[in-house]
Amino acid sequence: MKYIDEFQNPDLARRLLDTIHATVTRPWALMEVCGGQTHSIIRHGIDQLLPEEIELIHGPGCPVCVTPLEMIDKALEVASRPGVIFCSFGDMLRVPGTDRDLFQVRAAGGDVRVVYSPLDALRIAQENPEAQVVFFGIGFETTAPPNAMAVYQARRLGVRNFSLLVSHVRVPPAIEALMTSPQCRVDAFLAAGHVCSVMGTQEYPDLAATHRVPIVVTGFEPLDILEGVRRAVTQLERGEHTVDNAYPRAVRAEGNPAARDMLADVFEVTDRAWRGIGVIPDSGWRLSGRYREFDAEHRFQVGAITTTEPAACRSGEVLQGLLKPHECEAFGTTCTPRTPLGATMVSSEGACAAYYLYRRLGGTPTPTTAEATHVG
Ligand code: SF4
Image (cartoon, rainbow, N blue to C red; front, side, top):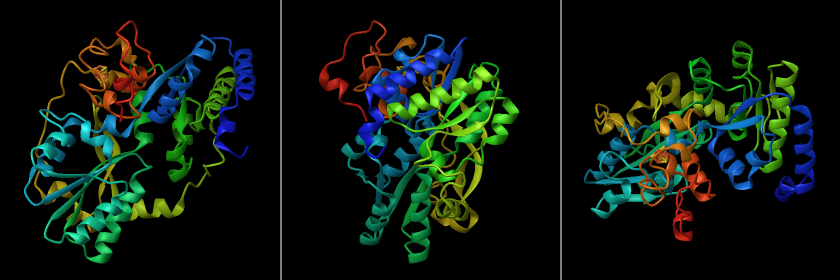
């Protein structure tokens, strides 16, 4: 296949579905790791086409959603400082902190800018030497390499007024934490294809063997997801638990060596808090010693900020696959994309936003078109 719409071919989808229906003999719970996969599943109704024995549970792989509240509060504090130009991807501006969001900081006079690349923020720093320019570096192994590149270039070019507020997270420790949780009911993982395009598949065989769980590297189009499900169910029915790459058009076993080298140079592994989940050991990156001077948390002395997450938001349970979004009491009532209580309703990759956008409302009012399109 050559073009992206071929990966949405209904005849091929029906054939894959027939194979899955013929293969499954008992209930299985599969977790798709990435929020992009969740959106594709809900948008195309894939979960409703699968045999009723197969449950897809939505994993924690939404970068905006897992960024902890205290990191949002740190961003708000830094962005409010005089002389700071705070740069971020657009999704983060609407994520609620404890008492406001970045849009409100901008409305109050803060210089908060949406950029499309961390290198844009670096350019802004070069053009505004009198200002402190901060880029909000969040996300998984996918967004970390360009952020690492921006810091690498800042150091190489001597751009001292640039810094990174770092909240990067890594997938394998999250899988480990999920599998060792007493509440875990995941039988197999659909691993995030774009993460593996950077990191390769070498981090997964130990996890698959230790926890006897199939891990199938899966893409994002409907046929990608159905093929990932087919391979995972086939392994489960056979009692196998290996790593299988169902996304070879993007993923090689070794990943992207240049990106991995950049990550290894600029970042070092650290414990990281995940929103609603808590601290997972070794689950994140921070700037390594050679680049510590570019760490905004140190530069602006905001490391001590701590916060308590609101009890009304159950995104932690959603992110662990313990709760479907429409089972949250606030879903579609006090929490909508216009009035989000948690990041999973804000982010374009959030499971709550996906359920709201694609009308998985569980009996709550149907959103207006304006609300439904007001996501991300
Ligand atoms: S519906 Fe809103 S309050 Fe409930 S878990 Fe999702 S984001 Fe949190």
